[in-house]
Length: 195
Image 1: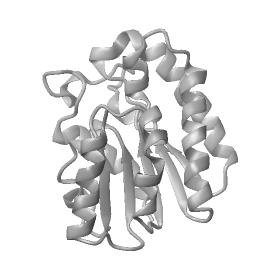
Image 2: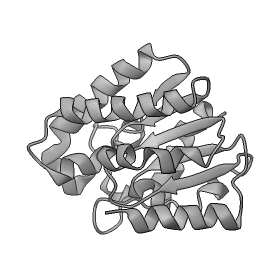
Image 3: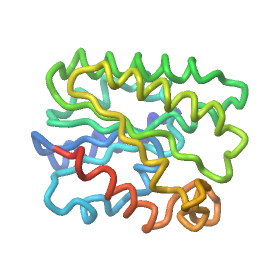
């Protein structure tokens, strides 16, 4: 399904060999659409390999392509939201297991680097899926806590107002993807975790 995207990454890497010791972003459209991510982290070298619509099943399927071309010092993953959107009946445990499978693939290739996971955001257009997403976030957080050199980066709190409601103005019209202000808030949470 995402074969074209993967070929595109390979082409980019051939034309411009990826820097070593960079921070590699892997995941779905919240990364893909963050086209100016480098300007949010001017002192970091970032390789953005998010591909829109991807699920954890896709990260697992393309794991070799996504990992073999790089020698990062850190990998940050944002993925899982589309797994639920794809199948509203999906149990949180299924998504958690998909993540653990991918995490193990990353660890096999990079046993010693930092590997972090950004919590699934609560997009207003997917409110019906929030209960499973909350459960998945909780279980992935617990899993990451037990892993060496691994962090769970929770961006959900910073996207809420003082009453604990998701701030809709952080989203563009589709109520799924984010505005620059949304990314600015993500940056404020991510910075302390960045190598």
